[in-house]
Length: 417
Image 1 (tube, helix red, strand yellow):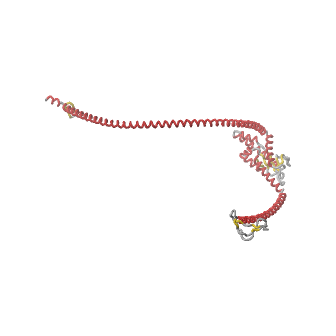
Image 2: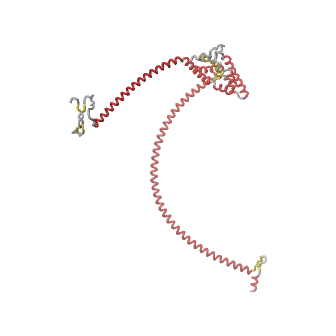
Image 3: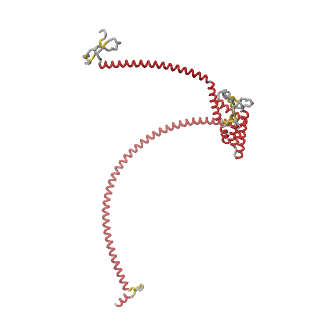
């Protein structure tokens, strides 16, 4: 016994100042075993309780599952019935759809056939029109080729200085001849100093004639267009300015004669492009020409000037014929007076006719009133005219009833009764 107590009192583990003996260790192990046993018992009890609860919940879930399965089976039966009805409806709809599609396909086939026929017809018509247009295009191409040849000829004409001058003169002559009457102008007329301007326009009332001369400085203008560098452009511009100044000086010295020609002469430039180049880039030349009393005109400005001269000539002719016009106006006024007198006479006839128509209307109104009185049997005492030219009379007699109709009637007494 002492040996056991000694054994139990022997230290086993030292923790700092504390000493753990074997007895303490065994006691602690027994307490630990007891605690584990209690915990195991508690865990087994809780596990049994949980299994019981799980079994109850499983039973509840099984009952719910059976209920739901019954509902699902019922819904499945209803669904099968509905699916059968839907299948029948779909079958009927499919048959209708098949029939409708067949009808539409037939109609579409017919329309497509008709459309193809119309399209074929339209295509044939379009091809026929295309052939016609191709023929027109061929004709136009021939005209273009002919025009190209004419352009080449025109280029050849313009490249020669003499032919170019003749071209400008012919264009000026065409404008003057189209705008003025014959005899109001003269081409290549000779002045007192022996010079011959291209055209002299004769002004009215003995006024001096207007001199027009055509100039076409095309070579210098083409040189300006063809110049690449600044230096070449300056040289070409100087040459162009020099040509214009020479033309202006020649016109001013040759064609401005006191008492024989107007104080101003026209220099006709037969190209609108050349005219625009002069006025845009050579303003000093234009001012110099104005000071020399030479007006540079283009085809459009010459046409406008000729129209103004035409109006002046027309006004002068009207002034010359003023006495004839006055006599014609006097005779016209006499004719108007005669027409006025005859209209007044006709107005009198119309007035008399209107009065006669009014009298006729009065008579017809009287006749209408008498007829209404006869219809209503409202004669007064005395005599009344009978529509027999006054040959008969109507006596104021009592109204007698007709035995057949039962209506009242009058007794008309003719002369001689």
